[in-house]
Image 1 (cartoon, one colour):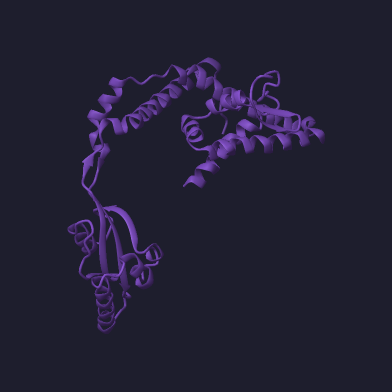
Image 2: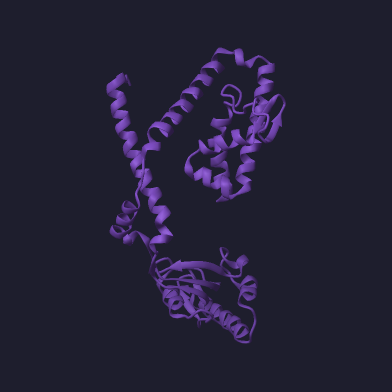
Length: 293
């Protein structure tokens, strides 16, 4: 997941960094400002870096400030683009008409983003009362179901198995159960003996899951166990299981303080979408739009 977010962030930063030279990313006159990086003739100052971080969507700002890896990704991207752009200029690519048109398109994109940020989004406010009202009216959205955290051991039986196959599987699972009853570690036994390819290498770990996610027989047995308990043999369409519940979470509604920031972000996004919708209607009336498909 983190790798995916790095890729998305890199794409987002790419648009910003391509304009390093033409938009004066780094202020060379800021002699007293800390220099974060140099790439040939170009300099990236701490102030310039902060300005660019602040120009990104809030989600990416938060990621960069919380994790040094994301900040370093931004700096690395700046270095790469700076070096490549200097080499491109050395080869006179900046004089190519097609490339100049692409640069103008990027300038238009950045101008549009800056306009929306400074003149539309900056005016949007979400009050504590709005947040509180939303929470009160949408509590169902913040309910967390009862969940159990479990491991299991599976002796698999084919869907085309004959009675003798089921008998052999039952004999094997009973032997495994004896080992567990004798004190062997559940995770170690699962890793050695389970036939579930999705959890075997993790010691049979399934993580937390709510009702409705597993087959009925498995679910009934798992939710009947207390934390630390191990089930008897459980028969399902997949074969025979032994389940160990490691933890439980009772159903609850998240407290207001837990979700306050999440609600604020939701309301902010809703207001932003509505503001953009109205803005486009106004601009269409002001400038006119003709589309010939």
